[in-house]
Every structure is written in C-alpha cells, then in structure tokens.
Amino acid sequence: MGLDFILKEKISLFLQVVSNAFITMFLKKVNQEISDYLELEIIPLYDHFDKAHQRDHVRMVIRQSMELAAQMEVDADMVYVIAAYHDVGLCEGRDRHHLVSAQMLLEDAVLRKWFTESQLQTMAEAVQDHRASSDHAPRSIYGRIVAEADRFIDPETIVRRTVQYGLEHYPELDKEGHYGRTVQHLHEKYGRNGYLKLWFTESPNANRLELLRQIIDDEPQLRRFFNEYWENIIKH
Image (cartoon, rainbow, N blue to C red; front, side):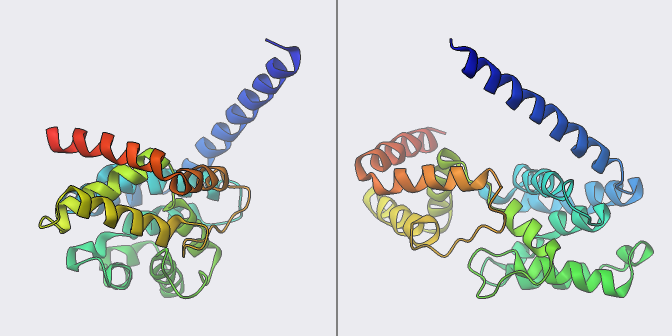
C-alpha cells in the first residue's frame, strides 16, 4: 500500500471526524421540545406509508439535511421541521403530497409556539419545493437543503425501492412488466436527461448519481440488479 494512498485515507478520515464534530454541534442547536414533538407526533406518521417512505426514509432526510445545514448560516430548528414534514402529505397520495405536506405544516398550531408566521411560510415553501419533479427551483436555501437531502443516491437502494414501489402500486404487472416500469422510471428521473436536479455540487450525491447513471446505461448490469432484488423481495 503506497504512502500517497495512506495519506489520502488519513486526510479523508480527519475530514470526516471534523465534519461529524460540526454536525454534532449543529444538532445541539435544535430545541429539545421541538425534537421531542416531532419524534412523538410527526415521524410516526411515516409508519403508514409505502416501504420506500417509512421512518428510515425520513430519518435519512433529517440526517442529511442537518449535515448540509451544518455548513451554512441557517436555523437548525427550521431545517429539522422541514425534513420531518417533507413527506407527511403522502397520507393523501403521491401526486399532491408536497402540497399537502406544506398545508399540514402550516395548519399545525403547535409549531406556532416556536416559529413566526414568516418562518412557517418559509418552511412550507421548502416542503413544497422538495419534490424532484418540481417545475421550479427551490425558493430558499431551506428548500435546496431538503431537496438535496431527499435525494440520497445509493444505486442499490434506488433500484430496490423502485421495484418495491411497483409491487405495491402495480400488482397486476408480471416480472417483465415490473422490469419495464423500473427501467422507465430510472431513466425518467435519474438518467442523463432525467428531471432530477442536484442543488449542491459539493454534495456526495454528485458522484453517486454518476455511478447510478453508469448502471442505468449498462442494461445487462441493471437487469442483474433487478433480478437480484426481485428474487429477494418475492421471497420475503
């Protein structure tokens, strides 16, 4: 193992430690009452959604939102609330979930204990703007943070969740039908001409997106991924 490689590994580890320290400090800024309220009343709502949007998803979006926000001059409480609320509107379906989520945030009287009307409006707009297929850029830094955090691009997870979503919402399709739907969705959203946009060029998502696109472009590899997840999901 070369000295250059070892040095790069040490630098990478050091930067990760520094980053984690900043994130820990940022999390300490969050009002404990707000955190407790979200944990007890809001995050449990995700238990009723599809497998791709349950507690593990919202916690991932919260964690990544806080990681991004730790590098910026933003309100930690607002970031936390936006991330927690971003998908609660799935209770009324996927098509309008970003609008319903924003409305639910605005109508939550409890939040008025901690936030002004202006802050609530900014948070609602951020929730509205998080959707990958939105026809406009997020209107604030808060919207860009949650939009980026919602785009955790792990190729294996994305393929698996696409298959899971298809099984839950299109049970009439056979295996080939699900494969065709998976390919179409991946190209439409994540492909080189897809609608997904990244808002921070320094985000780890940029490298992950390129890796995913290479898989999408390699049909035999994508087919192998699909077959593997299909068998695992069907068995369970």
